[in-house]
Image (cartoon, rainbow, N blue to C red; front, side):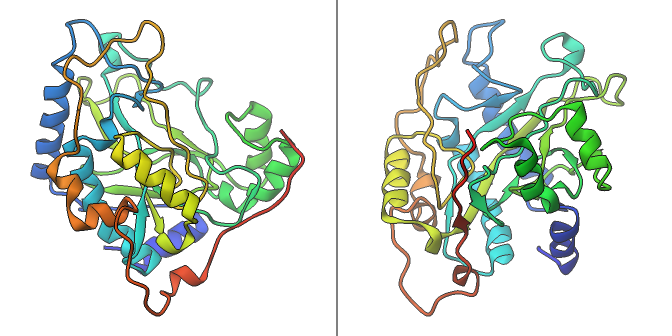
Length: 306
């Protein structure tokens, strides 16, 4: 699935599209499962979300989410050149048609362009999967940009920041991904979800995206494994980081959010396979000669910024 062109694009652009990871029929089956779940909520309500991202309700452990996650495994295995990986238990994005007044259209002045990687992470720490807009090539200037910001994290970019990147030949670009495809990007890349453009050709189309990040298991410490196993056993979601610096999300909803009338109470069968348990850190991988990818261990550095 991963070609040399994909690898070259990750190096040069900071992102690449891998088509055909799932068939359209497989996509439709998983979408039907999410729709069935959405229909259990009272009419006129929608699960708690931010920018269409749903990070509660144990959605990261639902059957369709695990089905998609396992479909992504061969891509990450080829990318890292090892089959010994750990996975994030990430969010799902369900974007409703803004034509119905439920969400906003894309606007150049309103964007969530941000960077997932914090300044204390040195070099490449992950490749992630989603569909979005991007500042192409911005990953090459990550260190200089964070030095300019003097902040540990970049949660949002300003017009001045966009100008700074433009001066270095990096511009905003919307990236399309076909149904069933994966869009991989460097964790240092500035990116955001791509809201629909007003007047689009298919005005009633919904958007379903499963976030997946997998990185070599050799990177994980005992503490990381402990956190992963706890999240898996308790059906909790995590952030993007799959092996190092794992962040477990709380399950509590914000005040006023609608509850799930039929919450997930146990892991689906697809999440209890041998592969799924290895990706979750529950089953350890056999110790053999180290894989090529595991010889590279991402590093942290000290920064004094908040």
